[in-house]
Length: 313
Image 1: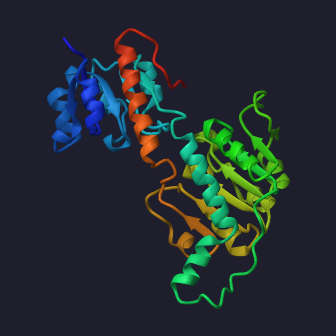
Image 2: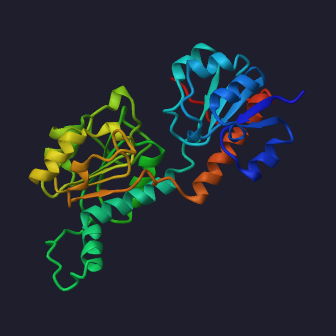
Image 3: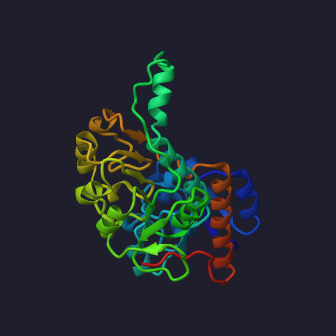
């Protein structure tokens, strides 16, 4: 008998591929997840997971006793309880790295947008203030020092692109990367003092919670720019509002927020802040690669082979 897989997202190309080896079930065929799990939970051996499937933890694992693997289409696995999965011997995989180029491109776009006040220019042009242009002068991006918090797949792609702007690249990471030709700084406030721009690509979690605090923002200074594409919890939102309002930090651009999708009104009122709705990785290319890798992980696991991209605690 074919292993039975619960798909939390529909994709005709992937369904055709997986249908050869698995019996597929679709979350979208049910009104609620609880209804789905009650009907077929005891038959499911694997979950093909997109974030639309809701959080996966103890309550799901209890209803899916045969579950062997959760294969996630994105790099982030925030919605999966990794501790509970590990305790039950459930393999968790992700699509780490497949969207690194896409997010890195977006990071540089946000940096230029915030640093050169492109959103302010768009507002002036659209509101009939073309001749006024009273936005103040900005500074060039090229040749100015860049700091990266989190030199993983995305951080490395950001750094490579920054080289095209002749930017000296510094980074703070859990560890010094001997394979990276960039300058390691062992604490974040010191990194912020050395650079004009800080791009955050670190993962979320307790270890990085509010790591970018008021001290880091003040160290960046009144001409500094902060860009966050990691997780919203990394940046202290209240401190950011204060720093931008008081001018101790020049500008910021956020693609992720604490408590998203709710956007605090205090953020919306800031003219020196760019906001985008967690869209850095949303390209056709990244999505296709994420679906392909998630499918390949399922195929490898049920063929008795090592999965391609396991997530470990």
